[in-house]
Image (cartoon, rainbow, N blue to C red; front, side, top):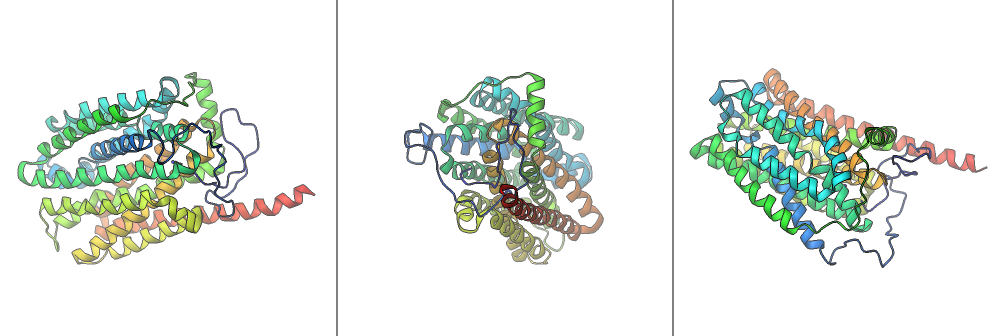
Length: 443
C-alpha cells in the first residue's frame, strides 16, 4: 500500500536477479519524487475516475472489515448463547481472519490471471452470501466454520485492491489512495461494531450480524458499479512454479520480511485489544450495557483519520519516524487503558487505534512500492502476515485476559510493540551498514 521510497535499493520480482540490499523500510534519506511523465495515463487526484475509484475501494474496505469482525463486539453474547468461554467464542473472529490469511496468496494468484476487479467482485459476492447465513448458525462449531469460509472469501479483497492501486494510480498519489482504502477498513470495523452493539441490545446477536450482512450487500453492489475498469493490468501466469518463484523472491528480501513482521505485530495488538475489550467493559467495575460497549468502537474514526493522513505524516518525519511514532502512540494507549475509569480506557483505545492504523498504512504502502513485479503476491504475503497476527492476537489476547485480566492483554500488546520497535531499529542499523559499505565498494 506508495509514493515515497522505502529504502530498497533493488527491485523485487519473480525475475529479479539483482542482489537485495538489506536497507531500512522507512529510510528518510531518499527524497520523495514523482518520476512519472506528465503523459502518464494512470489516475491521480482530480483526474478522471479517481474519485469513483477511491469511493469504490473505500466501500470495499467498509464491507471487508464489517464482515470480518462482525462478531467481535458480540462475543459476550455469543458466549452466553452457546455456553462457551471467551477463548472459545474468540474463534469466531480468529477463524475468519485465519481463513483470510490462508487464502490471500492463492486469491492473489487468481487476480494475476483473471484480473483484480473480477476477483474482488467474486470475493465480495461469496462473502456477503455467507454473511446472510451466519445468523442461522445452530452451534458454536457451525458458526466458526461459516466464519472461516467467510474469511477465505474475503481474501480476494486486500491483496487485489493494493495491486489494483499500484497499477492504476500514479506513484506520488499511491500512499494517499491506499490510506483511503485502509480508512474504509476502519469505517467498516467501526460501523459494524457500533451497529451490532445497539441492534444486539434490542434483538440479539443473530439479528445484529444479519444487519451487517445486509449493509455489506449494499456496499458490494455499489463497489462493482463504481470501480473503473483496469487499464494497466497485465495478465500473469497461474503456473505453480512461477508463483512459487515469485513468493520465494519476495521472502528472500529482508526489507519485505521486516515489513511483513511489522504488520503482523501491529495487528496482534489491535486484534487482542478489541477482541476482549467487550468483556472488560461489560464486567465490573464498568458493567456497561451492550449498546454502549458497541459504541466504544466509534474510536475507529480516529483510525480513519490517521490512515488517510499517513502520507502527510511520512512527508514530515519519514517512514522510519512514522513507525516509531505509531509504536509510541500505541504503547501510550495500552498503558492508559489500564486505568479504572471509562475516560482513561477510551483515551487509551483512541491512541491504540491511531497508532495501529498509521503504522499499518505506512508498512503496507512500503510493500507495494518495494515490489515492482509480483505486486499481488507481495501484498498477499503482507496481508497473510497481517491477518495471522490478527488471529494470533485475538486468541492470545483472550487467553491472556483469562489468565491475568486486562493487564495480561496489555502485556501481550506491549511485547508486540517492542517487536515493532526492535525490527525498525535493526533496519536502521542495516541501512547504516549498507551505506558505509557502498563507498568502500566504489573504490
